Image (cartoon, rainbow, N blue to C red):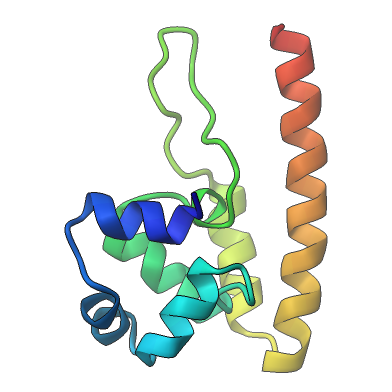
Length: 116
């Protein structure tokens, strides 16, 4: 299941409600949920606030956990990345998000391999 859809359903929201809260149209929420496009930096930040999760979680990354299984809170690095993406022109946001997604995926895969 898509992460945006899963978070929305867990929160008991309809697409229309999430669209209103995120400041987008309902079809945009549908596009996010069907992986037709990713939320831009400012929308990604807003979704993070709405659902109370790290932006990486919305993009499908598994949150880090400490040795007791507790989720590690947002890092300073993720806040910096969010601010950088927010300040980019829209045409550059998708490129930046693709780069971040690839980097995070590689990092999480290496971390999971070490933990296994």
